[in-house]
Length: 249
Image (cartoon, rainbow, N blue to C red; front, top):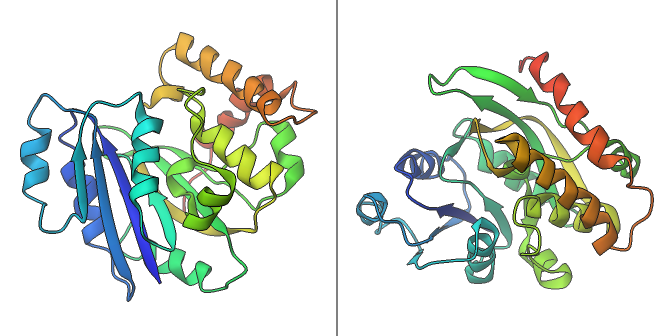
């Protein structure tokens, strides 16, 4: 089995840490690394050139936002399974891809996800996102899996589509709502931390961006002709409170 890992980046030297975490993975499968740079103007491209012999595909050109960059990577991917690791994130340990690919060894699995921790600049854990098992009913209460831990078969993108650029902040939510809730692809939950995520992100930043993200969440339900999601924009922020009280084992 072959896995493609896509890393979108723009002006972020932390991409070296992300790539190191991918390259440190221990597994017996073919790995394809795709880096999509959005036209960085700092030293990011110089850093990436140091990895050129280990990156299968490296492109650098302006894009229409992070989800446009992710879509470019998905279309270039030749792996059976596709994962996305942002430039400021990294895998939790060297066995993440091994465990993910073991999940996909069951031909009935279309997607999988796991848990995530948020870390500060000192690499200290400040939030623990324990996803829990999937059920359709959870979506009505504002649930979603952490997108950096989400892996999906390439043919699911081909069958159901890629990221919708009409959702510049909540594109990950819309995609997973479409795949997991609307299309009911077969998904497995890995009850372990897969990703260490840097604090921040488009949907976790300023108050205006949080408001806009939740407006996009409501629109995602309408875009997919789904009923019952009118309370989700209010419940979704509240669900994050529990991320501050749990601790990974």
